[in-house]
Length: 327
Image 1 (cartoon, one colour):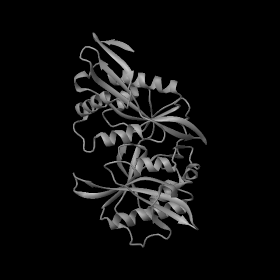
Image 2 (cartoon, one colour):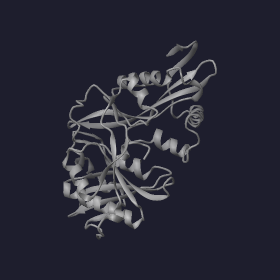
Image 3 (cartoon, rainbow, N blue to C red):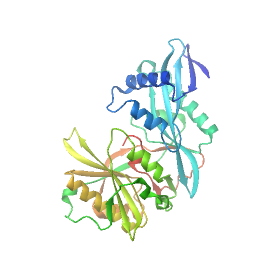
């Protein structure tokens, strides 16, 4: 599709994500928009854009026909969402960018409209977005629905009582141990689909990041798992740990997993442990707070693009840091 905007002609099209010429141009655009990023290399590109168990990333592009330069990109990574006990084809909005020299042409909105129209034709019923402060206004202009913010809950592990490692806790040694984790998410009326292939791709195969995964076993059956990531907060010069993902059978299993995260954080000398939680109106939230986590003022925006969802009832939704590719 060719569109004229302010006397310039732009071509809108979908990328061939395995094309070498495109990949080179994509990296050039990425660096022009965001600067040099640690870990932004071909290994990351192949993992993120080509290797997901749900399919290759759909990347939508805009080219300035006069300069033959890529000037905008909008990624929609295939996911699946379980909504009200029904599976829907879905996507995660990723790496939206407009070249600094081409801001003012409305390309953020135009590229979004083009991408989401194609996504709808493909059959995606739900699109998920976790935009930053700079991007939220553009997404809302496209027509996204803004939901409750994803607030961080924090705890200082060293203010917690010293306890031994919970019984039944083991470090994951093989992703096949998570064969039946899909059942953990049947309790929610909205969650991004988890299975052992997703965990393998998202956390075990990701380049340039390291995660620690613990499972909880009772009577030789896995009753829960938790994914942790230690990192250095350079601004505050302290070690922190994210609870990146978790799933569990019953609420007492969640409590054991959270205690495990505190135990691990102490062992690693992390002085802050945090996680996302969408709502304060749930048994799950009450369990997290009972451990000692407290809601902070820090949050990420959460948006959806869908005509399938009733946004009046989100108290039983499950969203974790691991649902966003950034963490």
